[in-house]
Amino acid sequence: MARQHPKHDHERSDTPLRPLMIFGGALLAVTVAAMLAMWGLFHYLQDKTVDTYPQPSPLAETFERPAAPLLQADPPRELEMLRRQEDAILKTYGWVDTVNNVVRIPIERAIQVVAEKKLLPHRPQQQPAVAAPRPTEEESDQNP
Amino acid sequence: MSPRTTKPTALRLFATLLLLLAAGEGCRLDMHDAPKYEPLEQSDFFADRQASRPLVQGTVARGYLRQDKLLYTGKIDGDFAPLFPFPITEEILLRGQERYNIYCSPCHGRTGNGRGMIVQRGLKQPESYHSQRLLEMPPGYYYDVITNGFGVMYSYASRIKPEERWAIAAYIRALQYSQAAPLEDLPQEDRQRLRELQ
Image (cartoon, rainbow over all chains, first blue to last red):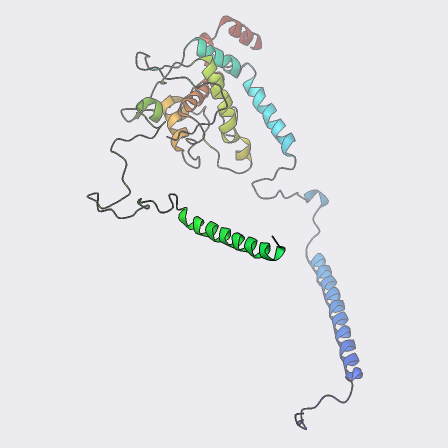
């Protein structure tokens, strides 16, 4: 058995409880006091601010919109509204310039007129004909 | 035959079989060690000492032969083409409309005014197709922009086939026409409806 050094020995008494309790109580008291002081200071400064500045009229309150881009609160409804606005332009007849007789016609009608009257010039087809795009859902695997 | 003699014999047979199997495995090289060049290996056979050979000059990958310059570039002698490479039928215009509404309308809007839903959420607004500048642009210009992109718009070449890019360009023309059609161009029935609106 190794010899024990006289200065290095196990504690022969329990931890003193009284100083710990005093320290804990003091810590709690300081914390509560600090919170009360902050609460009092907050209200003091708030009252002082209200006294200093004139109260704005309730009618002067404005709603500040968040910075752009605006977030969508109701995407389906907003898309439906946009579609309606576009359809009002794309599916109706109207006058654009009554003096020069310029008009607006529905897009489906415009497609028919452009195709029937051959308003879009194309290359003479004596050269090897190019296959027109077929209405299929095939995805192209050809890059330019 | 007693069990005493059977058991060691069976064990010897089993051990021999295992040894044969193990040895046989070593004989199966197949093509693991075939005489071949590894990628980028040096070769003394070719003059440039490279085992990996370049493509033969003039090689064209399947599906990448672009002989029709107008169809694939939208240009004639370096200028935007003022015409389409094939006749524009109603079927092509409808196909262009479908493709336009899928790929273009989120930014350009279905009316072509540049106020699509994404623009309303903060993306930079593209120019309206009904502006004087774009009304005067030839169809090859639209094909070129779809192919190569413009400003914040990226290239759609990997998404839209060349023929369909022309179909979209044709539809944009129809869209422009629908919003500024000369009255005298229209059939009688349309004129009548417009007269009623006056």
